[in-house]
Amino acid sequence: MNSYINEVDFFKNNNIEEIADTYGTPVYVYNEDIIRDRMRKVSGAITKYPYTANYSVKANTNIHILKLAVSEGINCDAMSVGEIKMLLAAGMPKERIFFVPNNVSEQELQYAIDEDILTSLDSLSQLEMYGKLNKGGRCAVRINPGVGAGHHEKVITAGKKTKFGIAEEDIDKIADIVEKYDLKLVGINQHIGSLFMDPQPYLDAVTNLLRIARRFKNLEFVDFGGGYGIPYHKLDDEKDFPMEDFKKKLEPILDEFVADYGYAPLFKSEPGRFCVAEGSVILGRVHALKSNSGVKYVGTDVGMNVLIRPSMYDSHHDIEVVRDGKTVAREDMETVTVTGNICETGDILAKDRQLPKIQQGDLICVLDTGAYGYSMCYPYNSRPRPAEVMICSDGSIELIRRKETIEDLMKLQINLSCK
Image 1 (cartoon, rainbow, N blue to C red):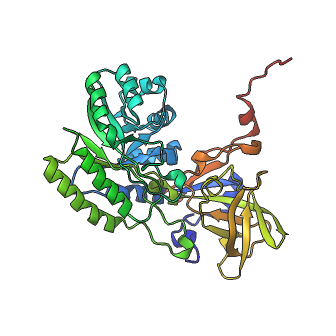
Image 2 (image 1 turned 180 degrees about the vertical axis):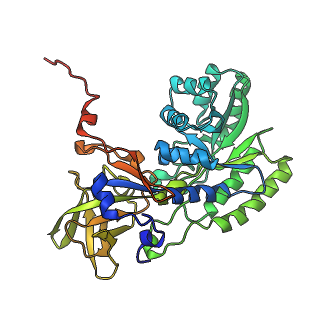
Image 3 (image 1 turned 90 degrees about the vertical axis):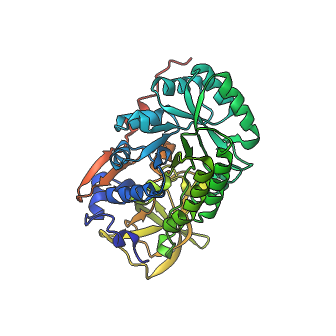
């Protein structure tokens, strides 16, 4: 593929250079149509039985994106009180929010109880804490199914080497705590990891969780988790996650469970990345070019503070080059290392990457940044976080978060008279 942003008309005929000039660089740019399309695709993963997709909002909590989830009719998972409050501000009904915290305080659990938001407990000790706070209440538990998958060990969230979930050997202890506090256990959930392109580990985990589900009576739902991958190597023609093939293989597994269990509970999934990753790019400016020991460096303003995934996970993001408002053809290529402007050796966006020959002043367009992009960016080196803009379905551009200022970074600091 020569240009993804041209192929999908990401910018809807808006001038890319004008967007960069208007909002400054770096800037996150979202495409409403792409986000809606991905939400609809994952909402159709199961059609034969009761099913809902819960957007895992930790991927991106911009309230305007959460409003898209509300309007598309998908539910949401929240990991913190902050995420719950973001969802409520976006108009998400409380009954469509599922609180799936990890190692939280009594105060956070009490907030969810007071707001009547269903909560999943991640450990026996948290289940005990919840029982003391909410005797007779409804809740769910997160199970570690013993199967994990993901693109990096830091995003594998099930199996033997993870902090998440209650091990299968402790299921009897779950029952003891539930009985002790007269809790009503209405569901079980899992999450095996993030960014898998092969559906088989997920199907294996579904099979295993449904085996475990048979040990619980009268479940209202079984939540399989998310993690469906997206093609980060688009320009090398990487294929999409095989959603249709996945659906065909998943249905017989559900058939067998339903026949054995006696009824179909509500089935759930927890897509985060799949919903939003492809719906955003980052525009950054090339400010410097130089060579050190035979390596050509392209210095940009897209530092690890703006997009930390490459530094944190060795993640790949395709990059397109934009000059005078138009993409530069992938023809006259050279090997470069693209870096940011942060004082860290690890501030590398792309190492030894084949890109069209870049000139100082060009724009780079970093693809697939909608998931764990802005939600993980931070003001390191006292660089304010960038603006976010949305290209709406009608082609108009809306500012959905202004760029931070230095004053924003300073205003929470308290003036102490130290001696």
